[in-house]
Image (cartoon, rainbow, N blue to C red):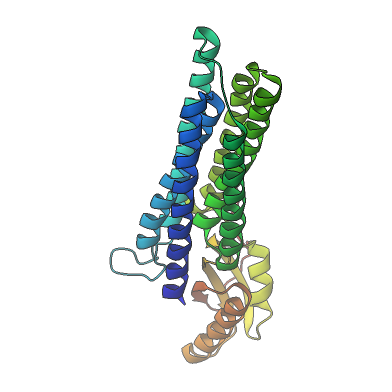
Length: 298
């Protein structure tokens, strides 16, 4: 299952990398030929798409959840680190777009000249971007891959960027409204920034070991197993659907170690059925131990 997951993520990343390189090349060629600042900024955005795919391929290579001696909890965080790299790329793109727009306002520049054929090329670019965004998102949600979902969000921001740039270029082609090109560079930057912030916000919980499952939920599952008196100091981390780690202290009513072990096995089975894949560590305590604390307090 693990190898199939990583192989499919790799295949999707390679396909989208080739498509993003095609999109980037078309935008750059049309941008330079027309002198459009907003289109060149959009091409810069597409450069980050390709860089993100390469980054995703690298992180996918090292993100196996299978533990080893150096990484006893697996390598899942490599994907989250890759997603943060995407956010960093977006931040750089946002800065470059704003810098170019301000320079055009202060120093001026050559007028934008665009033809109908070039507009048609941009429509092809838009269609490819839409395909890549939905393709990556659907596969990412099916596999539970944060790198694919993050990259799909980035590509979707590229779709809106291309739509806005295309609208401005149509206005220039039809009405010769040159200021549209510079004005549209600013919302492009805002869209890029918002996309980066979304990626950052969704992946930080994994990296800082934020709670994955409410302790009350784990508590109710555990105490439903016969022989469990209570449980406390419940902690969880990870990402549901990918890998979750659960730790707890559990008070059991058992006359011997073997019975206590059987009870903990049943609790682990219940948690596996509900939250798989999950790794559970249970510290067993005798029924004489008393506590009212379920989890850690603030």
